[in-house]
Amino acid sequence: MIAVVDTGGANLASVLDALERLDAKAELTRDRDLIKASPRVILPGVGSAADAMQRLNTAGLIETLKHLEQPVLGICLGMQLLFASSQEGPADCLGVLPGEVFRLRGPLPVPHMGWNSVEAAGSCALLEGVPANSYFYFVHSYRAPSGPWVKASAEYGEKVPAVVQKDNFLGVQFHPERSSAAGSKVLANFLAWKP
Image (cartoon, rainbow, N blue to C red; front, side, top):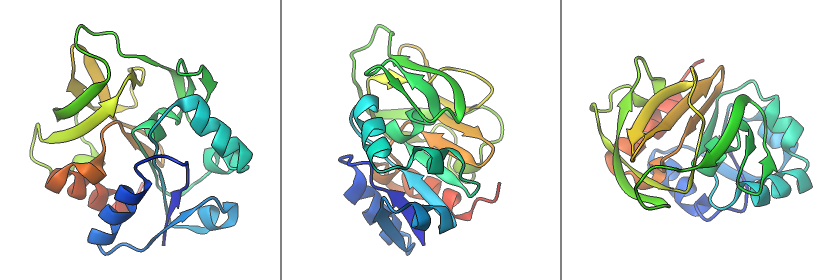
């Protein structure tokens, strides 16, 4: 059973549908015990960091999420919540990764919305078997800071972290649930991944 954390975001149904297409059993939940016991956890999100963190705080999930030891995948805003803080709000986030998420500053329109190719930086578990420079669907106005945790990037007027990893925590800035075959492969790789 995969625990999909109920962050109140607009992409919850599409994440559950994408997992169902992979024959993966998933449950949308805010139940701490279920999240702790699940072999895999997905933290999806659409919207603002401050609102999402407030919902997680109200549900009493912040400490639970920070200390999970099983594989965890943050999607879009869920990836950004893995960092220490976000300018969006501003908000204190989970602090699994260091640094502050900040507004896109390149010359291109914000939000970054549409298909972009993603380039791996060396070995990337989530992109195993995905053709190089495959396209994924992005919708975001803020980006993660760069650092050794970046496993893949997209070019959008600047190099934008697209996949991050620290220990058992993975994150993708794009929406794999809306990214066709390449996105399905990313989700399948997460389901099979052993940190």
